[in-house]
Image (cartoon, rainbow, N blue to C red):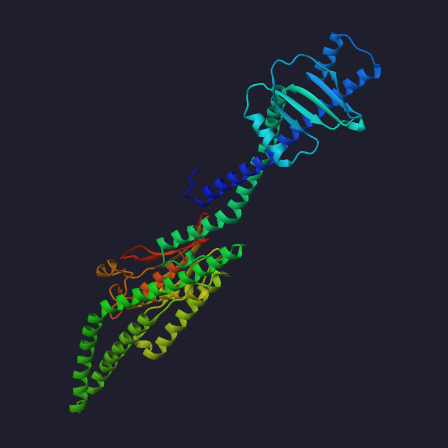
Length: 476
C-alpha cells in the first residue's frame, strides 16, 4: 500500500479509526462480561447456601465439596439479620490476593479491574462481595480462583473481536470503494485530462468537459476547461504570429517586386499614348490584384483565432453537395467573365458516398476544409487546359470516418511537398501563399483528426481526411 497516494492515506485512516472503534467496543464489553461472570458465581453460591440453610442441618463433607465445586468457589459467607455466617467452606490453596465489591461499582473501577486481570497470567485467590438476589440477605461473599474467569474473558473477547473485525473490514471496504468512486476516480479523471491535453494542447477535442457530480470537483473541471481553452487559443495565436514573423521578409520582397512592376507599367501609361496601353493595362491590374491578395491573406492569417469545433451530427452527402455546387457556380462566373475563347475544359465532379452516411464534426469547419481541397484540385486541372475529374469518397470504420478528395490533375510540384502544410512555404500553385492547406490541416487537428497526402504524380493527387468517432480516450 502506497501511503503517498490519496487512496492509500484514506485506507490508513480508515484502518486507524476502525481499530479505535474496536477498542472502544471491546474493552467495555469484556469488562461487562467479567461482571456477569462474577454475578453468576454469586448466584450459584447463594443457591447452594440456601439449599443448605433450608435443611438446617450439617451435611457431609463430600456433599459440601460437590456444592462448592458446582458453584465454582472455595467459601461462601452469607450475612442475614446482621449475622455473618460461613455457610460453605473448604481449604484455600493460597492467601486471598484481592477483594472486589460488586454492590455499587463504577465504570472506571470495573474497567480497571478487568484490564488488571487480563495482564495477570498467574492464578490468584480473590474475594468477591455482592448483594444477594431476591433480598435473601444483606450481602454474600465468596472466594474463588481468577484463572477460569480470565480464560472466559479471553474467549469472549476473541469471539467478540472476530465478529467486530468482520463487520469492521466490511465497513472499511465499503468506505474505501465509496471514496474511490466519489473522490479518487473524479480526481484521476481530471489528472488524465490534464496529461492528455499536455500531450496535444492544439487538439480542442482534449479539452475536458465538466461532468463530476461533486460540486468541488466540478468546479475544478470547469476552471480547468476554461484554462485549456485559453491556452489552446493562445498557442494557436502565438504559432500564427511566429509564422507571420518568419514570412515578413518574404512578403516584403515579393510585395516590393510586384509593386515595382506595377510602377513601371504605370509609368508607361502616364508617358505614352501608344496603342500598346491596352495590352499593358490588364498586366497592371493583375499585378496590383496579386499584391492586394497577398496582403489580405497575410493579415487575415495573422489575426485568425479559430474557435473550438462545435460538434454535431449531420448528413455528409448534403455538405459535399454544397461544396460541389459552390465550385460549379465559381466556374460559371469565371467563364462568363473570360468569354468562350478563354474557357478551359470542363471539370467533372464525382462522388462515392454511402447513402445516409452521418458524421460528427463542425459542419462549417469541415466545409472550409473540403472547399480548400476541391478548389485547389479544380484550379490545378484548369491550369492544364485539359478535361479532368475530381472525386470525393467517404466511409466509416470502428474508430471514425474518412474522406478522400482525389483529382486527375498534374500533381503537386516537387518543391511544395517538403513543406506542404506550412503557411507561406507550401504553396502548390503560382502566386499562392500556401495558407489554404495550412488552415485545413489546423482545422482537422482541432477535431482530433488528420489531413494527409495519400499520393501525387502525373496521374493526379489524393488527400485523405480522418475524423475520430469519439474524443481521445481518457482513463481515470
